[in-house]
Length: 368
Image 1: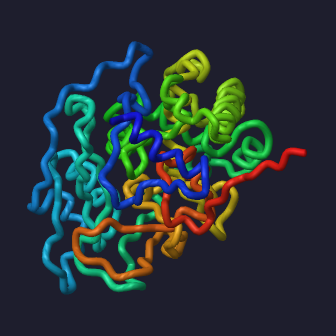
Image 2: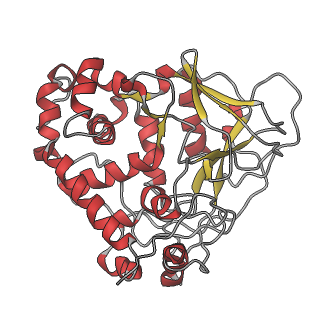
């Protein structure tokens, strides 16, 4: 069953006639459960067994994200079997300045192909009926993680990201150190939510960068196999430069009583964090370089990506706002545009493919 799931994702890279599963199809589970940002240098614990979650039609605790004013439609279906999980994240957002919006955080059950160990995925849904052009939510910049916030110096951010380190590496390292602080970190509820999602795409499949060697065999015959190798080598090069960030941004990292990056975190741990950040980073337009790449609570991976959508997260007056481009009924997942990316890039970056992707392409080599 798992092999069929993996193959259905990658067939789009093999032949024009093959089609990937639609985004609305049931979620597919991965074969391994990894924590995004481990607290300590030790063997990662095995996930606790959980019984398969059944779809429930009652409102979950995350309904507190709804505005208390204005007409609302009937409550949408919520599969929130763990209200405290979604509710804790929602409460953190509201406590730290998130204005009441028109969305709710619900749960999408995952097929129990791993003995019930896969936790359901959270997703942002319409908390009431919406019309095209409505503001679904608005996240203040105080709740957005950017290099400007991480480094506190835009010139340092430009220097680092125009040389050997990418924005993703800097953001991943920052969250790894914040995770080590546990509940003392401002970002603890957000990091906990990223841990829960663990880099899985909206089909509950991780990026091939985290697949095992036997799983990567599903890509044999596809150019994607080489792309995975190249990206993995690039991540390793960035890992080898992490100590540069530590020394150049000493004013930031002196607050952490931990070792330098390459001594505090082995490569595999950094790679997991990098891939998770890669799956949820937002590319903001018309902002400074230090704000260009951002981690936005309520953004991906809680939002559903689609290639034929026009809605985008945009920076407006000290916040990041989402205007929907289509009407929604309460309970429906909120969809945003993932950019002009072919399915090979969507699979590598986010762990899913889009069968209605107008930007998909297949390279055909001509041999003499």
